Image 1 (cartoon, rainbow, N blue to C red):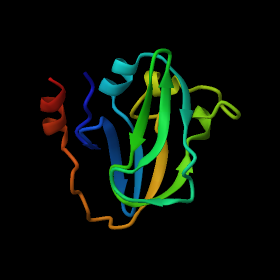
Image 2: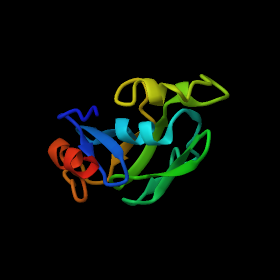
Image 3: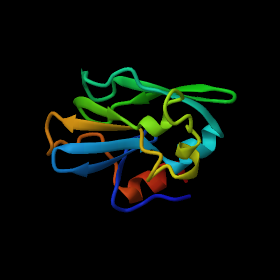
Image 4: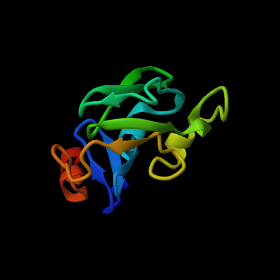
Length: 129
């Protein structure tokens, strides 16, 4: 299972890459493997400020739908348009490259120093083992 050391993780299987006051968020390799092939990614919260653990979107696989949770408080400033069926129509990029081209949203963090509730790679690897 791929668990990059440079990211933070949540118990809900989102990953977070923090760069200054911006975070890029996606779902982990473990999550995409459990969901199987994604057919739809929906994010209707661009422009909204959300608290940690609030739902920011959903992913739909062939057999299930799962909510996506904010790993940290902040404003959703971008959705990866390549995943949008009206633009890119390629939600399988989340399956193929969950930590790269399959990112889901970018967030302007309310508190860039807040890491509450986030796991490092070792803790996340232990969680999924």
